[in-house]
Length: 165
Image: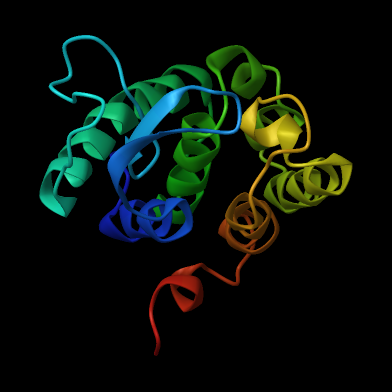
């Protein structure tokens, strides 16, 4: 299973597109849809990228998040649940994702409680979800934690956050 187009579009919507590299809340150079610039990825600080290039970088970044989910989840997931966990893994470091109460509850098949665990993490501060320190989290990340990820684990689905139906 891979992240769906809806999941990718959710990340794009909440991350927002930045065509020029900038320093994120912890001072790391970032571009596109939240891509952390690394040596060898073809991005030069000061240059601009296109939305197509940014989507390519995002999809490359998501491979690691998908692998993290594939290697840590022991139960059958719906596409929505898989997308949610990939989004969580994308916005955390691997250690935080692997120690997350959300992952533990998912592996026990307790999806409704996993949704509640998202709410509790958000109530404690999104910094626990994105793995950063300080109070520099964005409103978009708060929205992602509060409104997008929680419904992934319930019967509400998530398409209402991504499309106008």
